Image (cartoon, rainbow, N blue to C red; front, top):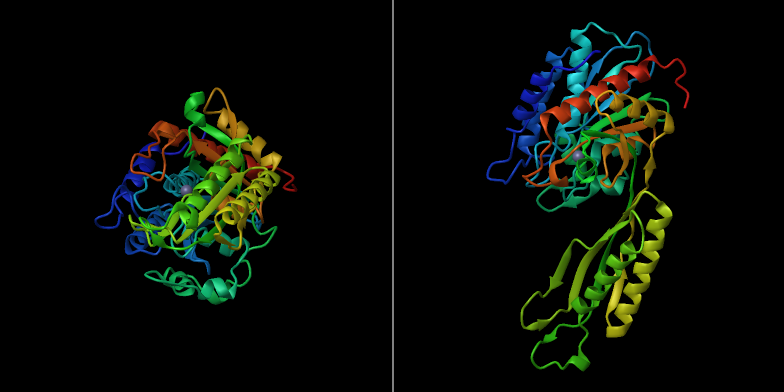
Length: 413
Ligand SMILES: [Zn+2]
Protein backbone atom coordinates (compact mmCIF):
# COMPACT_ATOMS: atom_id res chain seq x y z
CA UNK A 1 0.00 0.00 0.00
CA UNK A 2 1.25 3.48 -0.88
CA UNK A 3 2.01 5.50 2.27
CA UNK A 4 3.50 8.90 3.04
CA UNK A 5 6.97 9.64 4.41
CA UNK A 6 6.34 10.14 8.16
CA UNK A 7 9.71 11.75 8.89
CA UNK A 8 9.31 14.52 6.30
CA UNK A 9 5.83 15.25 7.63
CA UNK A 10 7.12 15.44 11.19
CA UNK A 11 9.92 17.80 10.07
CA UNK A 12 7.46 19.98 8.16
CA UNK A 13 5.17 20.32 11.19
CA UNK A 14 8.15 21.24 13.38
CA UNK A 15 9.45 23.78 10.85
CA UNK A 16 6.12 25.53 10.29
CA UNK A 17 5.73 25.79 14.08
CA UNK A 18 8.83 28.01 14.14
CA UNK A 19 7.03 30.78 12.25
CA UNK A 20 5.47 32.63 15.18
CA UNK A 21 4.84 36.23 16.10
CA UNK A 22 7.45 37.64 18.49
CA UNK A 23 6.52 37.75 22.17
CA UNK A 24 3.32 35.75 21.84
CA UNK A 25 2.22 32.65 23.75
CA UNK A 26 2.10 29.11 22.30
CA UNK A 27 2.03 28.97 18.51
CA UNK A 28 0.73 32.35 17.40
CA UNK A 29 0.70 32.94 13.65
CA UNK A 30 -2.37 35.04 13.05
CA UNK A 31 -3.58 35.71 9.53
CA UNK A 32 -2.24 38.84 7.80
CA UNK A 33 0.81 39.12 10.10
CA UNK A 34 4.44 39.03 8.93
CA UNK A 35 4.96 35.62 10.57
CA UNK A 36 2.00 34.19 8.67
CA UNK A 37 3.36 35.61 5.43
CA UNK A 38 6.83 34.19 6.15
CA UNK A 39 5.35 30.76 6.89
CA UNK A 40 3.57 30.82 3.55
CA UNK A 41 6.77 31.78 1.71
CA UNK A 42 8.38 28.69 3.26
CA UNK A 43 5.32 26.60 2.33
CA UNK A 44 5.59 27.80 -1.29
CA UNK A 45 9.12 26.41 -1.42
CA UNK A 46 8.05 23.11 0.12
CA UNK A 47 5.25 22.85 -2.47
CA UNK A 48 7.73 23.43 -5.29
CA UNK A 49 10.10 20.84 -3.77
CA UNK A 50 7.21 18.37 -3.95
CA UNK A 51 6.88 19.04 -7.67
CA UNK A 52 3.79 21.23 -7.41
CA UNK A 53 3.12 24.28 -9.55
CA UNK A 54 2.40 27.05 -7.07
CA UNK A 55 0.00 29.93 -7.63
CA UNK A 56 -2.18 32.18 -5.54
CA UNK A 57 -5.82 32.87 -6.41
CA UNK A 58 -7.80 36.11 -6.11
CA UNK A 59 -8.95 35.07 -2.64
CA UNK A 60 -5.39 35.00 -1.32
CA UNK A 61 -5.37 31.19 -1.21
CA UNK A 62 -2.06 29.46 -1.81
CA UNK A 63 -2.44 26.52 -4.20
CA UNK A 64 0.10 23.90 -5.27
CA UNK A 65 -1.13 22.00 -8.31
CA UNK A 66 -0.23 18.67 -9.84
CA UNK A 67 -1.70 17.91 -13.28
CA UNK A 68 -3.80 14.81 -13.84
CA UNK A 69 -3.97 12.58 -16.88
CA UNK A 70 -7.38 14.00 -17.84
CA UNK A 71 -8.76 17.54 -17.92
CA UNK A 72 -11.23 16.65 -15.12
CA UNK A 73 -12.07 19.08 -12.31
CA UNK A 74 -9.42 18.99 -9.59
CA UNK A 75 -9.41 17.14 -6.32
CA UNK A 76 -8.77 19.71 -3.60
CA UNK A 77 -7.02 18.81 -0.33
CA UNK A 78 -5.73 21.10 2.41
CA UNK A 79 -6.64 23.34 5.31
CA UNK A 80 -5.13 26.54 6.79
CA UNK A 81 -1.81 27.71 8.28
CA UNK A 82 -3.03 30.63 10.39
CA UNK A 83 -3.61 30.17 14.12
CA UNK A 84 -5.44 31.95 16.90
CA UNK A 85 -3.51 34.00 19.45
CA UNK A 86 -1.86 31.48 21.79
CA UNK A 87 -2.86 28.50 19.65
CA UNK A 88 -1.18 25.17 18.95
CA UNK A 89 0.95 23.81 16.15
CA UNK A 90 -1.51 21.22 14.81
CA UNK A 91 -4.80 23.03 14.10
CA UNK A 92 -4.88 23.61 10.33
CA UNK A 93 -1.17 22.88 9.87
CA UNK A 94 -1.55 19.08 9.70
CA UNK A 95 -4.21 19.46 7.00
CA UNK A 96 -1.98 21.56 4.74
CA UNK A 97 1.25 19.68 5.46
CA UNK A 98 -0.58 16.34 5.30
CA UNK A 99 -1.95 17.29 1.86
CA UNK A 100 1.59 18.20 0.84
CA UNK A 101 2.79 14.78 2.07
CA UNK A 102 0.11 13.13 -0.07
CA UNK A 103 1.28 15.03 -3.18
CA UNK A 104 4.88 14.10 -2.40
CA UNK A 105 4.03 10.40 -1.97
CA UNK A 106 2.26 10.37 -5.36
CA UNK A 107 5.20 12.11 -7.02
CA UNK A 108 7.76 9.76 -5.42
CA UNK A 109 5.75 6.72 -6.52
CA UNK A 110 5.40 8.11 -10.05
CA UNK A 111 1.62 7.95 -9.84
CA UNK A 112 -0.36 10.34 -12.05
CA UNK A 113 -3.98 10.69 -10.96
CA UNK A 114 -6.79 11.10 -13.47
CA UNK A 115 -7.77 14.33 -11.73
CA UNK A 116 -5.49 17.28 -11.18
CA UNK A 117 -4.61 17.49 -7.47
CA UNK A 118 -4.59 20.86 -5.70
CA UNK A 119 -2.97 21.29 -2.30
CA UNK A 120 -4.48 24.38 -0.72
CA UNK A 121 -3.66 26.69 2.17
CA UNK A 122 -6.86 28.69 2.62
CA UNK A 123 -6.39 32.33 3.56
CA UNK A 124 -7.29 33.32 7.14
CA UNK A 125 -9.51 30.55 8.46
CA UNK A 126 -9.36 31.57 12.13
CA UNK A 127 -11.21 34.58 13.51
CA UNK A 128 -9.44 37.92 13.57
CA UNK A 129 -11.13 41.28 14.05
CA UNK A 130 -11.41 41.33 10.22
CA UNK A 131 -13.45 38.10 10.09
CA UNK A 132 -12.78 34.40 9.43
CA UNK A 133 -12.89 31.77 6.65
CA UNK A 134 -11.60 34.31 4.11
CA UNK A 135 -10.14 32.01 1.46
CA UNK A 136 -12.90 29.42 1.46
CA UNK A 137 -15.62 32.11 1.49
CA UNK A 138 -13.95 33.83 -1.49
CA UNK A 139 -13.96 30.49 -3.30
CA UNK A 140 -17.52 29.42 -2.49
CA UNK A 141 -19.51 32.63 -1.96
CA UNK A 142 -17.60 35.82 -2.58
CA UNK A 143 -17.98 38.97 -0.49
CA UNK A 144 -20.25 42.01 -0.42
CA UNK A 145 -18.76 45.44 -1.24
CA UNK A 146 -19.65 46.52 2.33
CA UNK A 147 -17.62 43.67 3.82
CA UNK A 148 -14.61 44.41 1.61
CA UNK A 149 -14.77 48.09 2.61
CA UNK A 150 -14.86 47.37 6.37
CA UNK A 151 -12.14 49.29 8.20
CA UNK A 152 -11.09 47.67 11.45
CA UNK A 153 -8.95 49.63 13.85
CA UNK A 154 -5.44 48.15 14.03
CA UNK A 155 -6.07 45.72 11.15
CA UNK A 156 -6.98 48.07 8.29
CA UNK A 157 -9.47 47.67 5.46
CA UNK A 158 -10.55 44.12 4.58
CA UNK A 159 -9.84 44.58 0.83
CA UNK A 160 -6.33 45.88 1.56
CA UNK A 161 -5.61 42.97 3.90
CA UNK A 162 -6.60 40.49 1.17
CA UNK A 163 -4.55 42.38 -1.44
CA UNK A 164 -1.54 42.33 0.87
CA UNK A 165 -1.76 38.54 0.94
CA UNK A 166 -1.67 38.40 -2.86
CA UNK A 167 -5.43 38.44 -3.43
CA UNK A 168 -7.43 40.56 -5.87
CA UNK A 169 -10.39 41.99 -3.93
CA UNK A 170 -12.02 43.44 -7.07
CA UNK A 171 -12.64 39.87 -8.28
CA UNK A 172 -14.27 38.71 -5.06
CA UNK A 173 -17.80 40.03 -5.52
CA UNK A 174 -18.67 36.63 -6.97
CA UNK A 175 -17.47 33.16 -6.00
CA UNK A 176 -14.15 32.12 -7.53
CA UNK A 177 -15.43 28.61 -8.19
CA UNK A 178 -18.83 27.13 -8.81
CA UNK A 179 -20.58 23.83 -8.47
CA UNK A 180 -18.81 21.32 -10.71
CA UNK A 181 -15.45 23.11 -10.60
CA UNK A 182 -14.14 20.84 -7.81
CA UNK A 183 -14.47 17.04 -7.96
CA UNK A 184 -14.18 16.75 -4.18
CA UNK A 185 -12.63 18.56 -1.23
CA UNK A 186 -10.98 16.58 1.55
CA UNK A 187 -9.57 18.04 4.75
CA UNK A 188 -7.57 16.43 7.53
CA UNK A 189 -7.86 18.23 10.87
CA UNK A 190 -7.37 17.62 14.57
CA UNK A 191 -10.66 16.82 16.29
CA UNK A 192 -10.34 19.64 18.86
CA UNK A 193 -12.68 17.64 21.09
CA UNK A 194 -12.68 14.55 23.33
CA UNK A 195 -14.67 11.97 21.31
CA UNK A 196 -11.88 10.01 19.55
CA UNK A 197 -9.67 9.93 22.64
CA UNK A 198 -12.53 8.62 24.77
CA UNK A 199 -13.20 5.89 22.20
CA UNK A 200 -9.47 5.07 22.04
CA UNK A 201 -9.24 5.45 18.25
CA UNK A 202 -6.57 7.50 16.41
CA UNK A 203 -8.68 8.87 13.56
CA UNK A 204 -12.34 9.29 12.66
CA UNK A 205 -14.61 10.09 9.74
CA UNK A 206 -16.56 13.36 9.98
CA UNK A 207 -20.28 13.24 9.22
CA UNK A 208 -20.79 16.98 8.88
CA UNK A 209 -20.11 20.41 10.34
CA UNK A 210 -22.49 22.09 12.76
CA UNK A 211 -24.38 25.22 11.80
CA UNK A 212 -23.59 28.36 13.78
CA UNK A 213 -25.68 31.43 14.57
CA UNK A 214 -24.06 34.43 16.23
CA UNK A 215 -25.54 37.75 17.26
CA UNK A 216 -24.37 40.82 19.17
CA UNK A 217 -26.77 42.28 21.68
CA UNK A 218 -26.71 45.58 23.56
CA UNK A 219 -28.60 46.03 26.84
CA UNK A 220 -28.88 49.64 27.90
CA UNK A 221 -29.96 50.53 31.42
CA UNK A 222 -28.73 53.44 33.50
CA UNK A 223 -25.44 53.98 35.32
CA UNK A 224 -26.01 55.02 38.93
CA UNK A 225 -24.10 55.40 42.19
CA UNK A 226 -23.69 51.89 43.62
CA UNK A 227 -24.15 53.21 47.14
CA UNK A 228 -26.99 55.67 46.88
CA UNK A 229 -29.21 54.17 44.15
CA UNK A 230 -31.60 51.84 45.98
CA UNK A 231 -32.30 48.44 44.48
CA UNK A 232 -35.83 49.54 43.58
CA UNK A 233 -34.77 52.37 41.25
CA UNK A 234 -32.01 50.60 39.36
CA UNK A 235 -31.88 49.68 35.68
CA UNK A 236 -28.96 47.28 35.96
CA UNK A 237 -27.82 46.16 32.49
CA UNK A 238 -25.45 43.48 33.77
CA UNK A 239 -28.03 41.85 36.07
CA UNK A 240 -30.27 41.67 32.99
CA UNK A 241 -27.54 39.98 30.98
CA UNK A 242 -26.88 37.52 33.83
CA UNK A 243 -30.43 36.22 33.36
CA UNK A 244 -29.93 36.02 29.60
CA UNK A 245 -26.74 33.98 30.06
CA UNK A 246 -28.63 31.52 32.25
CA UNK A 247 -31.37 31.22 29.62
CA UNK A 248 -28.76 30.68 26.89
CA UNK A 249 -27.16 27.85 28.85
CA UNK A 250 -30.56 26.32 29.53
CA UNK A 251 -31.58 26.46 25.85
CA UNK A 252 -28.63 24.23 24.95
CA UNK A 253 -28.82 21.96 28.01
CA UNK A 254 -32.33 20.92 27.05
CA UNK A 255 -31.17 19.71 23.60
CA UNK A 256 -28.96 16.79 22.66
CA UNK A 257 -25.89 17.75 20.63
CA UNK A 258 -26.50 21.49 20.85
CA UNK A 259 -24.25 24.09 22.45
CA UNK A 260 -24.82 27.78 23.24
CA UNK A 261 -22.36 30.29 24.61
CA UNK A 262 -22.13 33.88 25.78
CA UNK A 263 -18.41 34.33 25.29
CA UNK A 264 -17.87 38.07 25.16
CA UNK A 265 -19.08 40.81 27.52
CA UNK A 266 -18.25 44.51 27.44
CA UNK A 267 -19.56 46.21 30.54
CA UNK A 268 -19.78 50.00 30.77
CA UNK A 269 -18.61 51.82 32.72
CA UNK A 270 -17.14 48.63 34.28
CA UNK A 271 -16.43 50.17 37.66
CA UNK A 272 -16.73 48.70 41.12
CA UNK A 273 -18.92 51.49 42.48
CA UNK A 274 -21.21 52.11 39.53
CA UNK A 275 -24.39 50.21 38.60
CA UNK A 276 -23.66 48.79 35.11
CA UNK A 277 -25.30 51.10 32.57
CA UNK A 278 -24.69 49.19 29.38
CA UNK A 279 -23.54 45.71 28.35
CA UNK A 280 -22.64 44.62 24.86
CA UNK A 281 -22.40 40.84 24.54
CA UNK A 282 -22.41 37.95 22.09
CA UNK A 283 -24.62 34.89 21.85
CA UNK A 284 -23.52 31.90 19.80
CA UNK A 285 -25.40 28.64 19.16
CA UNK A 286 -24.32 25.50 17.30
CA UNK A 287 -25.96 22.26 16.19
CA UNK A 288 -25.83 19.90 13.22
CA UNK A 289 -29.63 20.30 13.15
CA UNK A 290 -30.46 23.84 12.03
CA UNK A 291 -34.03 23.66 13.38
CA UNK A 292 -32.49 23.25 16.85
CA UNK A 293 -30.42 26.40 16.35
CA UNK A 294 -33.54 28.33 15.34
CA UNK A 295 -35.50 26.95 18.30
CA UNK A 296 -32.70 27.89 20.73
CA UNK A 297 -32.57 31.40 19.28
CA UNK A 298 -36.35 31.83 19.71
CA UNK A 299 -36.03 30.85 23.37
CA UNK A 300 -33.09 33.15 23.94
CA UNK A 301 -34.79 36.14 22.24
CA UNK A 302 -37.86 35.59 24.45
CA UNK A 303 -35.58 35.53 27.51
CA UNK A 304 -33.80 38.71 26.36
CA UNK A 305 -37.07 40.61 25.97
CA UNK A 306 -38.42 39.34 29.28
CA UNK A 307 -35.25 40.15 31.22
CA UNK A 308 -35.07 43.64 29.70
CA UNK A 309 -38.72 44.44 30.41
CA UNK A 310 -38.37 43.31 34.03
CA UNK A 311 -35.63 45.85 34.78
CA UNK A 312 -36.58 48.69 32.44
CA UNK A 313 -33.52 47.95 30.32
CA UNK A 314 -33.77 48.44 26.56
CA UNK A 315 -32.43 45.67 24.36
CA UNK A 316 -31.06 45.94 20.87
CA UNK A 317 -30.54 42.66 19.04
CA UNK A 318 -28.08 42.89 16.16
CA UNK A 319 -28.31 41.04 12.87
CA UNK A 320 -27.68 37.31 13.03
CA UNK A 321 -24.54 35.97 11.41
CA UNK A 322 -25.39 32.47 10.19
CA UNK A 323 -23.34 29.63 8.88
CA UNK A 324 -25.55 26.74 7.81
CA UNK A 325 -24.74 23.17 8.87
CA UNK A 326 -23.09 20.99 6.25
CA UNK A 327 -23.88 17.28 6.00
CA UNK A 328 -21.15 15.61 4.00
CA UNK A 329 -22.39 13.42 1.10
CA UNK A 330 -22.89 9.76 1.93
CA UNK A 331 -20.56 8.53 -0.82
CA UNK A 332 -17.64 10.61 0.48
CA UNK A 333 -18.37 9.51 4.04
CA UNK A 334 -18.25 5.89 2.88
CA UNK A 335 -14.93 6.42 1.11
CA UNK A 336 -13.45 8.13 4.15
CA UNK A 337 -14.77 5.46 6.49
CA UNK A 338 -13.18 2.76 4.33
CA UNK A 339 -9.91 4.69 4.09
CA UNK A 340 -9.79 5.21 7.87
CA UNK A 341 -10.60 1.53 8.39
CA UNK A 342 -7.22 0.63 6.87
CA UNK A 343 -5.46 2.39 9.76
CA UNK A 344 -7.73 1.79 12.74
CA UNK A 345 -9.61 -1.30 13.94
CA UNK A 346 -12.69 0.65 14.77
CA UNK A 347 -13.96 3.56 12.64
CA UNK A 348 -15.96 6.19 14.42
CA UNK A 349 -18.12 8.75 12.62
CA UNK A 350 -18.60 12.04 14.42
CA UNK A 351 -19.85 15.55 13.63
CA UNK A 352 -17.58 18.58 13.87
CA UNK A 353 -18.57 21.13 16.49
CA UNK A 354 -16.06 23.61 15.09
CA UNK A 355 -16.38 25.48 11.81
CA UNK A 356 -13.87 24.67 9.07
CA UNK A 357 -13.06 25.67 5.50
CA UNK A 358 -14.98 22.50 4.60
CA UNK A 359 -18.20 24.24 5.75
CA UNK A 360 -17.76 26.74 2.94
CA UNK A 361 -16.37 24.45 0.24
CA UNK A 362 -19.12 21.95 1.09
CA UNK A 363 -21.59 24.49 -0.37
CA UNK A 364 -20.13 24.10 -3.89
CA UNK A 365 -18.43 20.70 -3.88
CA UNK A 366 -18.69 17.25 -2.31
CA UNK A 367 -16.61 17.63 0.85
CA UNK A 368 -15.34 15.28 3.52
CA UNK A 369 -13.09 15.40 6.55
CA UNK A 370 -10.89 13.13 8.62
CA UNK A 371 -10.29 13.92 12.29
CA UNK A 372 -7.15 13.08 14.26
CA UNK A 373 -7.34 12.33 17.99
CA UNK A 374 -6.46 15.39 20.10
CA UNK A 375 -4.96 15.04 23.59
CA UNK A 376 -7.55 15.87 26.26
CA UNK A 377 -9.66 17.43 23.50
CA UNK A 378 -7.65 20.63 23.95
CA UNK A 379 -7.21 23.08 21.05
CA UNK A 380 -6.73 26.81 20.46
CA UNK A 381 -4.25 26.70 23.33
CA UNK A 382 -0.50 25.99 23.67
CA UNK A 383 -1.29 22.53 25.14
CA UNK A 384 -2.92 21.41 21.88
CA UNK A 385 -1.34 18.07 20.91
CA UNK A 386 -1.79 15.26 18.41
CA UNK A 387 0.57 12.26 18.36
CA UNK A 388 2.76 11.76 15.32
CA UNK A 389 1.52 8.20 14.70
CA UNK A 390 -2.08 9.40 14.79
CA UNK A 391 -1.33 12.22 12.34
CA UNK A 392 0.46 9.82 10.00
CA UNK A 393 -2.52 7.44 10.14
CA UNK A 394 -4.80 10.35 9.24
CA UNK A 395 -2.62 11.47 6.32
CA UNK A 396 -2.38 7.92 5.01
CA UNK A 397 -6.17 7.66 5.20
CA UNK A 398 -6.36 10.95 3.28
CA UNK A 399 -4.06 9.49 0.62
CA UNK A 400 -6.21 6.35 0.34
CA UNK A 401 -9.36 8.47 0.06
CA UNK A 402 -7.78 10.56 -2.72
CA UNK A 403 -6.85 7.37 -4.62
CA UNK A 404 -10.34 5.93 -4.12
CA UNK A 405 -12.12 9.05 -5.40
CA UNK A 406 -9.73 9.33 -8.33
CA UNK A 407 -10.48 5.79 -9.49
CA UNK A 408 -14.26 6.02 -9.17
CA UNK A 409 -15.66 5.47 -12.64
CA UNK A 410 -18.78 7.51 -12.12
CA UNK A 411 -18.12 10.85 -10.46
CA UNK A 412 -21.78 11.84 -10.31
CA UNK A 413 -23.08 12.45 -6.83
ZN1 LIG B 1 -8.52 24.73 12.04
